[in-house]
Image 1: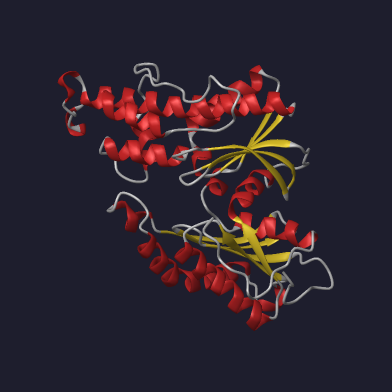
Image 2: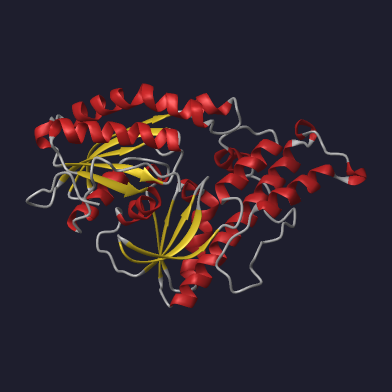
Length: 347
């Protein structure tokens, strides 16, 4: 693709725009790391009533939020178009309607302000979010992106070079947590709800199988876990229990046990990848990377196996534009600019 506008020098201050799912985010980042301003407009409340993200509602929400978020970001940074060197925007993957809102806003700004345009891959950006907290990078890394829509393992040889080692064959880890929370009547979003409900529970009270650990594969499968949870709830006689009548102690144990099964699977796959690739460093990003049990488990495994583990900062685990602008700088250094015909790609 031919870039519509090529800069004479590498852009240093980049405006990032993220709208791949249900967060509208805008950020201004200097030199790939220094966050000058960051805005995130969440739609959690709008989607909670439906038990998950509704694409049409998400798209409309982005339309309402994108201009106020842009204005607020620039005002916070006390910055005008003349201080912006380039526009970076998520172009894939994500919900098509949501992606189009951010992408069209970025194109309009690039054209009106005569700035280079950079199309950024959302999953690569989650990996870059973990890199933003590391002072000196030491490639390669084994990288895990774990969220509501993605569970992928990579070998990362640079911010722009990622070899996929494994992925989920069905549900993503975050999706499994959301569905488990819905089954238990805990509401949306499911990950934080499961974590809160299970914080005082016994993670060994219920025996959930850790899927796909018997093979050398680095792929994941979480759909069977939610089925196992459903069968556990049915109890004697095959009649499904009413989640409201389970009792707080049993519910806490169920949540802790289910969460632990997912966390153990993620951690052991990461360790397997480190051993197979002979790489002693881990990067972990994505919304589920905020999970306290996952962080604790990974830190323990790292300590026991002489590994380094780097998580994205909590504010950079969920969707944000800091990581889009930051990775945009790496794209710019590599000369990866886009044309105004840049398309949104759901996959």
